[in-house]
Amino acid sequence: MSQRRYRQFCPLAKALDALGERWTLLIVRELLSGPKRYTDLREGLPGLATDLLASRLRELQQYGVVDQRDVPPPTPARVYELTERGYALKPAILELARWGRPLLRESADDRLPDSALLLGFEATFNPDAAAGVDEIYDIEVDGRRVAVHVHDGAVEVTPGGTDERPAVRIVTDRPGFTDLARGRPGDRVQVEGDTDALVRFQRVFSLS
Image 1 (cartoon, rainbow, N blue to C red):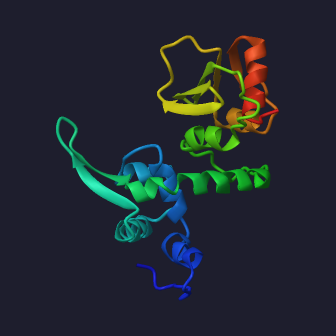
Image 2: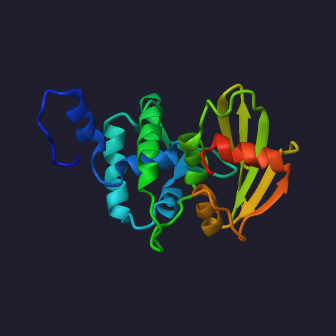
C-alpha cells in the first residue's frame, strides 16, 4: 500500500487513505462498466504506467474494493472486478463527475475515454427533465455503441446498442461527441430519428 496516510480518526480521511492516490478512482471508474482484464485497464487508462497500475490494483484489493477471478474457457482470462464495497462507490463517483463537469475545457490533449459513454450519461442525467419520457437512444462513437434508455425518471445505459427501434440514433467520433456534450453538435454528428426526440435527449442530458 501507499505510505502516505493522513493518520486521522476520521472516516473521510480513512476513505482518502484508500482512494485518494492518483489514478485510483479512475480505475474504479473503468470497472464500473464490468470486469476488465489487466490489458483492458491499460488501454482505458493511457498514461498510467504498468507498475503503478499493478500497485493501485493491489491496494484496492487489500481495501476490499477490487477482486480478481479467472474466466473459464473458451476464452480463459484473469479479470479484475469491483466487489460489493467497490460498487458502493458509484454514487460518490457520479457526484464527483457532476461537480467536475463545469471544469471541462477545450484541450487538444484531453482524451475522451470509452467509459465516458457509460458514466457520462448517468452523470449528466436530469431526472426532472426526464419526467414522462420513455425512449431509447442509440449512440455510436468511433464504432462503440451504447443504448441509453430513459424511463420513469430514471436512466439505464447498456453497452452494445439496442435491437429495438430507437427514438434517436447518433453516430459520431470522439471530437464530435465532445462537441455534442458541450451542447453544440456540428458536422461530425450524424442524427437519425425524430427531431423532437433529439430535443428531449439534449434536455434530459443537459446537452443544450
